[in-house]
Image (cartoon, rainbow, N blue to C red; front, side, top):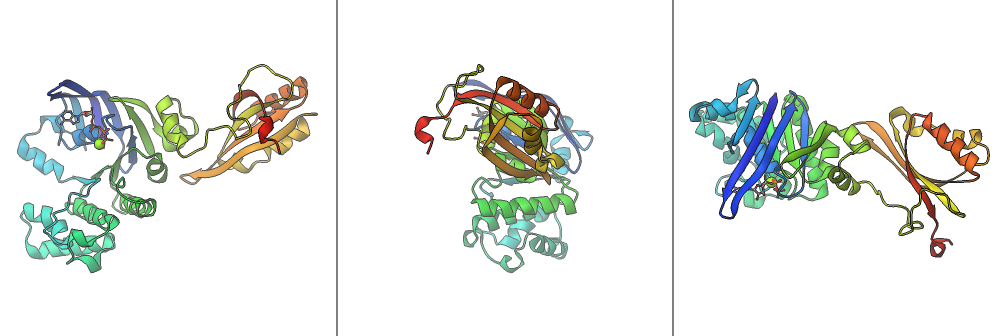
Length: 353
Ligand SMILES: Nc1ncnc2c1ncn2[C@@H]1O[C@H](COP(=O)(O)OP(=O)(O)OP(=O)(O)O)[C@@H](O)[C@H]1O
Ligand SMILES: [Mg+2]
């Protein structure tokens, strides 16, 4: 549905050239919710604005629904943009117009008559849950309600694509969730392709099917949200995910040297990741039964779900004879669980109670 090929964008600024996008290739399938996450200045807004040509790429092709946007004339572009709706962090509503008129605004621009506008706007008000607010002004609405108006306005021209640039960044977590739920409903009911720009991994986790991590104008990593969450490769991805998932060692071990060699009195710490059906498999109980003499201490555990797929993360500490520990590692290696060896760590004596 959206294909970006070798997108480059260079801005001229008073302090010199800024190379905001450095060769972006991206494929977004029809009906997909695709997230793009990156730090401030990474190039996210520039990238999303290249899709509807609010920014013209310096080089590369932008193919939307089979059409190369970079070759269109201004009037062809205006037509093509009708199929791409956009919502913004600060809503960009007309403060002097009512909710109804804000949603009607693009339709008036297209020259639609008042009767047809009414037929279009009323179901949209209902869809976003604002039928009772039609005659209010943006200043009388909460942030979440304003974004609902933004969404209804973006949908007024029956777009095939919805671009969301930090659409929930100005909202509290609960309101964010309700807006993300609404975007999901719209994606499913209207078969809309959605591109979500954010700096919050929580948004990606709640909403997106796929994700690309952008850093300094290049895509550092991409894949299904489940893959990227359970097996992040790039340091920047790990950083984003660590906000949601505690990657820290339990307090009793923090600050202690981690060694790959066994030292007396230390535990071998492992991080285990279980996915899908396996998440509730009694793997550890089997390990203890099978591997004579190994002791297992549970230090951290978290069960989560990504798109309905259970996802468990645990940190365990193994102790016992070398042979017992080796046999436990062998056992785990043969199970459907990802094992990361953290290393041998001693417990802080102060933390032992
Ligand atoms: N109109 C412009 N003129 C000059 N430089 C620009 C312009 N727009 C963006 N840039 C620069 O391009 C780079 C990418 O900016 P962009 O706005 O795409 O980042 P972003 O990832 O959306 O950041 P944020 O999370 O803060 O919104 C930055 O270095 C920015 O300063
Ligand atoms: Mg931005």
